[in-house]
Length: 260
Image (cartoon, helix red, strand yellow):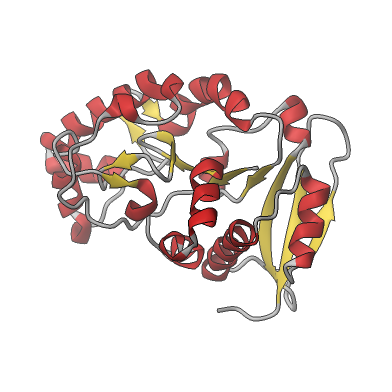
């Protein structure tokens, strides 16, 4: 099973670990594309601070993020699973999983990123600020920048098993499973059952709990139909829509009564 996650806007501090080693990151086929983003982001943030804030869409209160980006090559690095925080990651609770579930997380989870493209939770990265919606002056829109290398690298990473996609729209646009990979991909959204509306905070929290439940239970669904049964066994209310034709993904709605 491969689980595609969004990153978090908020991130823990880099800490005092050894600096980033780009060549050590997973998915080496993305190295050149990562280096291009990293180089321009560091140069941008080491220059005109106001321009950098504008490009990155940062408020005055987040001015310090510019200086942090300027130091990315020398800042301490920590496992990505410790860097990403926020609602989804709080609910996922990687640190409190048992040893076997942590091994499954290291093997299964892939976090998408405007800066790194995609990383494993065990990859050591510094704290940064650069969303997939950013348009860098030199490289242009990051979503478009990542599509070609992702299309080359991700199908192999997906292997032959289930792909569970809980990414937000901006990150989903960087790589859309195609062909037979799409047929074993399930995209999940979370709905408030009484209103059948997506609520942002509660949507993220529930997605985090879903992924945690699968990791903790040791469930190994082979495809979307098996995933639906596994989630029901774990107590979730799921409505599934199989693809109408080949080359399309499954759509899963998880219904929750309480918004919390």
